[in-house]
Image 1 (cartoon, rainbow, N blue to C red):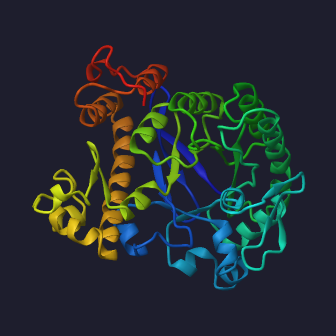
Image 2 (cartoon, helix red, strand yellow):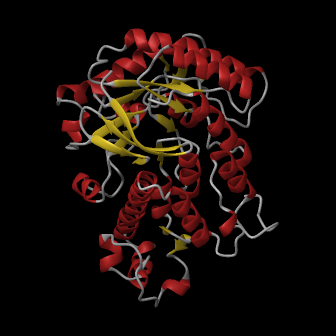
Length: 398
């Protein structure tokens, strides 16, 4: 095991911890930006350090295609290749296969897919996924799992969960660098509490360095989403990091942290920036709107980032449709916002004022008190009283 996870503070189920990885000492809860090809679109690695980014996520599938894991290995690993001194996490490649490629076929052996290069059938096995990730050299590597959309029901969900459990043993056996890289298992089982429970227990028996909750953020209702997170966090070990995959909406991160999750990743903050949208405490600000054309205020007057200190909404509005600089500035701001949210969660838990932080967050986002019902239900389970920022009977469904 190449990590240390030390809980520094708690509030009911929420925890603030120090996660020591081979390349960096991280503070949780934390958000990981997604750098598909070993880069966060539009930002340099020194800018990511400047805004407090702790771990970057790399996509194994994209890196294996180009520049190839062999070349990355030859050039000293991904840290050296992209000149990133802090921590890295790579996914297994399975999700991309299923979501990006036609005719991906999943069997006991692994995932068969058409090569995007020459159209020939190729097979990604658990063993090969781990070998590729061993060459890339990230601090945290993910087991190959059988990914199924949560909106699917029936025997396929059960089959995928059992594949995931059987494949974890093949991943463990293939992992050649356990003292330098941490292999996380992924809890699957769709929206079925019985299958989720079987998967959690199976993975916990393998005593892995950390655990991810997979198969969410794929179109299920928010009510189903938070209940799966609550069930899994309650059953996973206290002394290991818990990572909810694919979650990047600030509200979701606050709720999942209250329920005891530690790590998150998503393309949302940078993707939404490329569409001209900024994350602000009130929710979002659409810089393409004509109302922004003569607005001299910063994106967020309460934000201390370089973009908010330097540029007006009017300037960014002018850039956003015409110039790559617009999406770069918004990406910078949005990731700064996510890093600050992570720090604020961490600090408020340690300082014993987490409920106040949550209430303040909700009050700004829902000034009319119309906090969604799923958030109210989740907070009740998390043991956080948010009655002061909810107007009675006015909660909306989503």
